Length: 541
Image (cartoon, rainbow, N blue to C red; front, top):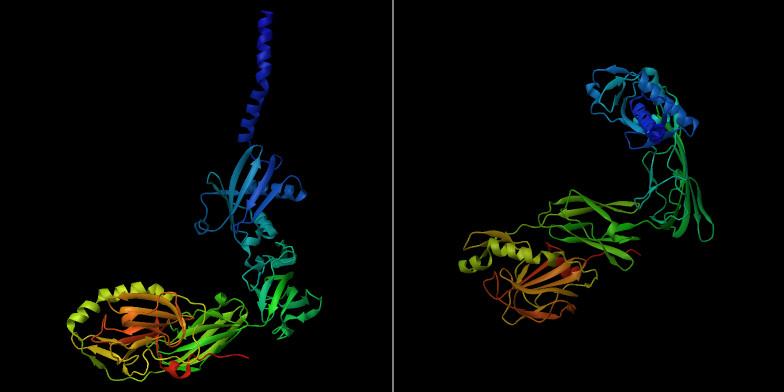
């Protein structure tokens, strides 16, 4: 009997710690939260900023006590006020023993309107004193728009962190609250930024004071040290690798809800500002103009706009030390003054172009058999041509092959119908705008390259018959339709005057014909000025 009791006592001794632990755990689960048993509070602000408070510091202990007591003193209400149900809120996770409880806090800049909702969905009104204390702390910064630190954006789109920053915002009492800021590591290890035409910092909030110091990294020479407002054109034409230091200040003043000071540093590579020129100041509807750029580091970063809009975005190509873009003004362009705005790096420039009206001429009759029209010029054949030619029109030849005057497509022949004339098909009554030049030719006449270029298309389409397309570079293309035979192939580089084939009669035509069209990408332009002046391009010295 004695051995039996001994065995029972041994079993009880083995299980007793587990039983005690279970009892303690159950007790902890059901016990009210006390600041004495809370080990951690994690608060997430509406802007995503997270604050963690633990018992390892006096500040952490103070915040733990604050949240526990604020919850305890909050007075239950039937429901959260309707106007707050969609408002952004603070989320808190309070850890007590091994349990976590979640709370949602709704604070406004009115301390009388503060509420908490527990994880069971029960709402309570927070005491004004507690709400006011929270609103006066830096942890409430996301509620104050003026707490948002200003940012500095560099020309390459980078947002630069300050080396040091002091930032304050005015709280509900009218006093200033200081907040911490994310700090960078200074200029060391940063990729140098390419800057054209001087230092042009972009702040999200304009500072009241800004000083700039620029030092050459090659010899330590101070290129500028002073107020940004006095910088002027001091660095406009400087080419050098430099280190830049800036000090920005935002002063306290009546009616302003913020103040601060911030220091920045970064490496840069300075170069003269980009500048742009128009080849001509006035053109006619259906012509094109050339924009030339100087001191442009990256032609792909150039931004272009036009007022009024011209329905075309130029593509800039490298041409030695310059960049060029051909800008077509289609026949549909309304005559008038156009302002082109071009941005490249820190440079922004406006240029005025006058577009004059093209002379209107009488409609020309086109006698062509209905069966030819119905076979070669239908909605289906025109659509098929447009689809097949779209990649050809979009082709970008980056080499400039054209130079000097342009020739006509057929040597020493008269023009039958010119660019921009309105034509009426007698057999159908349809009218259309002639987008090229037709010549009076004889069978066997040679067709010639109007200028240097690369052959980018040789083929046949129902609408055009046998067709050759030559890219002269920078989007300028010549198209030769209705050919009898073709003596070049795709990829050939031709010179001005080279024979590319013979005239023919295939496609939409009533006889032997050479239809020659000049385009900038897919927009037809008038070839006449090129016969006398070539492509007019400004050549900056």
